[in-house]
Amino acid sequence: MGQGLSCGTSDEHGLFSAVQCGDVDTLKDVLERNPSLIHHSTVYDRQSPLHIASANGQIEVVNMLLHQSINPDLLNRYKQTPLMLAAMHGKISCVEKLIEAGANILKFDSLNGRTCLHYAAYYGHFESLKAILSSACTSHVAASWGYARFVNVRDGKGATPLHLAARQRRSECVHILLDNGALLRFDTVLSLPSQGRVKVWDYTGFPGSTPLHLAARGGSLDCIRELLAWGADRLHRDASGRIPYTVALRYHHGACAALLNPSSAEPLVWPSPLKFISQLNDEAKALLERALMEANKEREKNILKGTDYSAPSPTQSDVGMDDNISEVSDTEVCCICFDQLCTIEVQDCGHQMCAHCVLALCCHNKPNPTTTSPPEPVCPFCRSNIVQLHVIKVTKDDDRDRDLYSSKLRKSRRSRNFSEGSSSFKGLSAVSSFGKMTGRGSGRIAAENEWIDKPLTLD
Image (cartoon, rainbow, N blue to C red; front, side, top):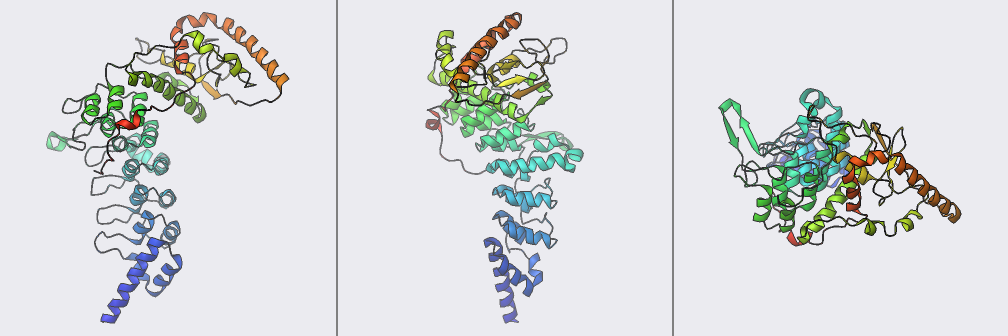
């Protein structure tokens, strides 16, 4: 009897060791001797072999266990699924395999009421985050539960994945969530209508915090940049009446406080008229977003220096322009700002602009007061509606003769385009300054690391 118990204990130990190390051969030998062990779990945490394999990224073991018809939604002591543990540890191959095997992305644990999306956002594993969001788009979740609802799902303390990503300084996850419809004005307040009252969870020390409040507490300039660029409100107050600026000051994040100060210049925000462009492909969108962030970084430099922003004069911006032109054979200088190279082309009419001027064109389109909706952006040269934008492919040319010819051709085209659209520039006086404001360099803020606190502890 005792010998049998000892052998069983030894086999069980061998099973979990083999699973953790990814030793498939040993695992097969153990299961051949005692097939029932595949359903065993650890004594205290109730971790199944699939939990352990997923957490350690042992994809071969995960494949083997799933082929044995193991339930992909097994629960441990805290009602965590193998998918949650894979997302927590950033094991993207296991995340994808479990989703492929039918793992439920809508499971909630019993620790904090979090889903696998919360775990990926909290620990900053953006690849796992993308895989889970992609699954939500194509699975029954989008149809039955709602994709927007899933992206903004709250945990047991009222925090959405965006709250967690902002609190933990996960700027890439913040960007992905915002790009997928995460709401900026959600705060950490849970309403319980069945009890006829509102319950406030103190997740951050400041109940009612928005993601911007949490980014201010964490001291992440990158997260604050992303949130502000997507339209986060610097004046939104938490349950204690604090704005993000006050939170940043309390935690001694001086650089963050400077950007969040309501008296500092407003950041440029991703313009809503671009939403009316039916075919804004990923490449063009990435180029425009980069231009927006560069513009805001230029503004930040002056804010952090404590000086008011002033745009460089045209003479400063145009210095060396012709030298820069001669380096590129197939790209013209933007005929709006005469500072940046054209990178965006308007489909159908073929007119070209730099990304900065495309953004400025859309940023300065004000909503129609009668319809309260932004107008569709129009080409400043021919006034036709912009329905599609493409990125211009820039190619280098080593032939000097052709380079010289291209330079002359561009100058003639520039004068032709300018005269062709001269009547359109009267209402775009702010566009030129936008293009010149950004220049070519962006650079990181030198003082950023000076304001970072000690590493954050997990909640």
